[in-house]
Image (tube, rainbow, N blue to C red; front, side, top):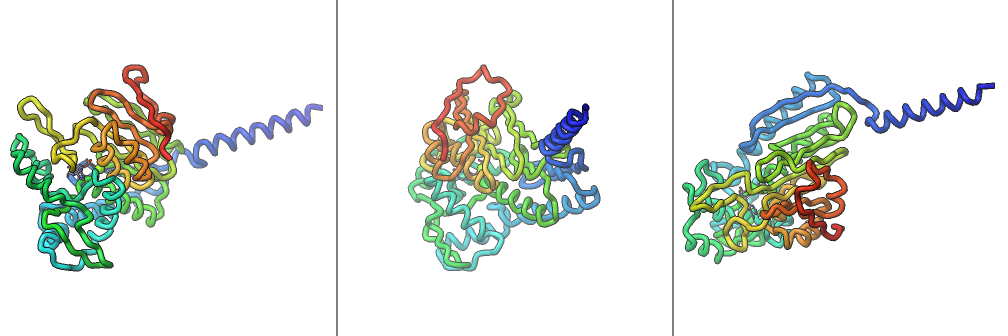
Amino acid sequence: MNGPAVCTRRVMITLLLGLLTLAAGCSPNQARYDTRFLAFGTLMDLTIVGIPPDRAEQAAQAIEADFLQMHKSWHAWDPGPLGRVNRMLESGERFSAPPSILPLLRLGKALSIQSEGLFNPAIGRLIDTWGFHRNDPGGGRPPPPETIDRLLKQHPSMLDIEIDGLSLQGTNPAVKLDFGAFGKGYGIDLAVEHLKKMGIENTIVNAGGDLRAIGLRETGEPWKIAIRHPDGNGIVGSLEISGDESVFTSGNYERNFTWEGRRYHHIIDPRTGYPSVGSASVTVIHNDSTTADAAATALFVAGPREWHRIAGKMGIRYVLLIAENGDFHMNPAMQSRLKLADATSQKIILSQPLE
Ligand code: AMP
Ligand code: MG
């Protein structure tokens, strides 16, 4: 007589197990391989899940070699392809673009236009003047206002670079390319594409908190990403990432110096030539890292009043901007994903949804 009850219980147990397996991404407790190396001047953490350790190690070595090559190609100050491109752009002559630079140039131009020029990789001379690429930025003091004025009046813009197939021509000698605001993102995208080609489906490529994650972690759960508080005290909260997403943060704490009691950081507002005012940090979630990196910089410059418009133009759907005054600005979709470490101690200013 208890046949149907047993049968129902069996069906229930099977269903439950099925659901649990689904929730756990089908294959919990897989092999995990972690390694760390230096790239783009930051410590890069690479985690690979679900393949044997020897294959994971081989893959990691290939990725480390990729990053070394990229760093050489894109450094604006060391001799190399980008240095040559900068010299040729200044000369105004037409020339063939090095293959390692062309895709970045195309992407950089498109993203700069979308950001209304707030993300502007053509302001290398300004960056140079501030000296944030040096260990001792600006010799510890801001450049003379006349120097900044002179550079601003020359309006270096990505629109001053004509791209015709494989050839390039500069139309403004003040343009100097600096890929510092999105080169790391592009590098992570290339690394993830390479890892995917090697058959890796679960991995996280993390450059000092800027990262792209695909698949799931070894437990079969989503990756958990902590977001650092810009005031240096612990974390703001955490995000769960699965599938294929990038999380990038631009912050005023990353590189800066203090002069006569004022702090000067490394993210320059191309409209003023000075470190941008209003933001302490901006975190963006987006599918590809190139866009996420460029957008975090652009929205940082846009600040509490303009970030929403620029995010819309750049196609960004998740933004958290922590203002200099400590307020948290975010869109509703970000709010629903962000698990705040302390939900009571800050003012949250919720924007309209981002389409
Ligand atoms: P990120 O940390 O990604 O926001 O990038 C900051 C770096 O990008 C700086 O160290 C500069 O090299 C460069 N940079 C600063 N301001 C800008 C800007 N408005 N647009 C493009 N690149 C910038
Ligand atoms: Mg950036």
